Length: 254
Image (cartoon, rainbow, N blue to C red; front, side, top):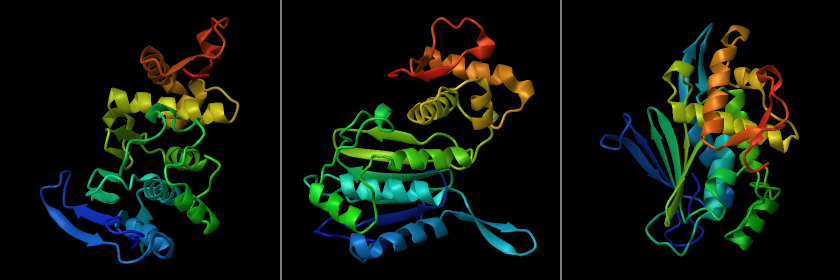
């Protein structure tokens, strides 16, 4: 596992039995520096978030995309606030989510992490991690992570913050009927952000593909789009288009 580059900045990994932190399976603290231990840390997380699948032979299937874990852990390391003590980077595995926490509030609006240019809190650390090939400095890391989440048809990534910390949540696969309204809106919004970065707008078909809906479920996709519009996260790309069939949408900031 990865560990400290300065006192108190080690990475802590915790795995719990259920959906809360009342019963811990085990805890492990990092023993190596970030550069030496980073890939080992990612491997460790992947092993502890995989499930056994039995086909012709027993295999381990990933619950979360490796690229997403890699990008979010790297960002937690690079963007942590070393001025806040007693809050090391922490990866926590629950039965229904993965949480990555680092000290320090995000420098950008949590609803604009996909499109806004990155800001570095620790310039020297960011440059070192870049030179070692651990992270990039183009601002596309979160885009790749969320795109990977979409490819696996997982629920939307959740970002939360306080004045003291930033937290990222990843969730395992969940059927649409089990998703909350907020989860559907978040997934639709992130889908729109990714498409907008590609110079495209979302529509009923793209939303159906995002949620694995068939053509007969267009009304379901329309409802998700409508709810996301009502929440203020997306808007019509062309206000002069009146046909719902041909309506396309972009993020609210577009």
